[in-house]
Length: 376
Image (cartoon, rainbow, N blue to C red):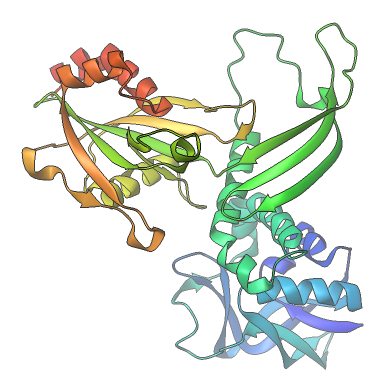
């Protein structure tokens, strides 16, 4: 057995069990002359030197199988085991601790006060449980550094799952059978990178009360996303962006550059409105005013696991606001267009708006335009 001092997220029982693949024996311990601080940018725990203090945590005992899983998980974030001496039950003990492989002051992120396990569990615990499951699945076929580079999108997908679990439709109509009426027979993950594909075999209770025969299905999974249609009520115009869309390309569309509202995936830790404002800056250089919620919806729930949050945003759209923008690190190449209201309505009617969130947002704006113009 190998004893390891854990001070951060692995102190969370369910996350630790997911990562280790089993329940581990734990004992309270402290690391002298150290403290656990919260990283300023992410809120993740960081172990720092702090003379006279003691970092509180657990000593876990891992067998060879659990140790391999723990080492691989921590390697995703650039961590490896280093020897330390901890205090435990009135005695000292030599154990190891996970620390950055390059453990210098320059390698450690800036911190912002003590890290709290209880606060982290409240804000991130459920998300990290889902994220840890996906990390461990990906480690079966990909090296830790590759999985680590994907952790942002993994956490984003995990947040999407938690968000949907906590959301309830009003259910004003429909039989609305519960999730428990679906029986999952098998589940596989043949592809998981920036997007993911899940293959499931399931049966479900039918409306006549009988269980269906097992059905094999595939689902495309993406992080939840936001769309925002900027509208200038004074000039009575909208802004659209244009970019290459691979869905249209592989569908053999002769013109795969589509006109769309501003859009982007919701990063872990963000709410939809924050994402809308961030994406408007990145994709069109816009600072948005009031955001008007259009809808929360599944774009294609028969085979796509994703929720979209669409908004119409009040924005100042002078003639010179258009240009080329986009997040360079993500390879975005985006051209923006100012569209007068009459032309926008003609484009909607004639099918020139071939993007579902744009159609939905334009129809909402047609219903509410007079009110927005009256309010300035």
